[in-house]
Image (tube, rainbow, N blue to C red):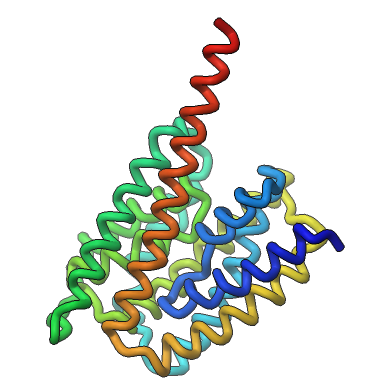
Length: 261
């Protein structure tokens, strides 16, 4: 067992804890860790989705058992996201374009959420109309497919910023949304020959340990303002990682062009 695998396991515990506390499973965090450790690009997507499923199952159980899931809010987003995630996954856009763009959106959302958490009272919420929820679900599913995540990183800030749900309801809807999209994504990845490495069992245990602790605190201990601030931190981590990846790609392309010239 390599030191790289052990370091990944330790970091996956931290990612699983932080993300699960706000109803996420950690896909963007796992991808960032694997990228920093120089893991094979071919193994990153199936590994991230596998860990996503493990943590999302735990988070779903925690938030549902705590009574925070609103099925009527969840299903309109999910019913369109699954097929659109499949379509989005089959499209390859220039990563130096969409990664920084999405990263900037997440950073802006983090700022808005943190600013909102400074208010003394949580705002009143109202669920979106069915057409709006179906359209948003389709767009979010497509974005999830493009980025190789479960989509919760986009759904959570949307629900909160549009005042469609409170923090705990958002976490419950998001974690189940992530679960169904991650299962669909992993099926597609494995069908095309992409499989996680042998160390996946150890990483699943590590992510599950962090996910169990984080989702328990998120569902039963943390207040709404705490969840908003934690989500803002998660969005900053994810957004910064995407912007960094985009900048690195541009630099590599620029270096390659100069070498060719």
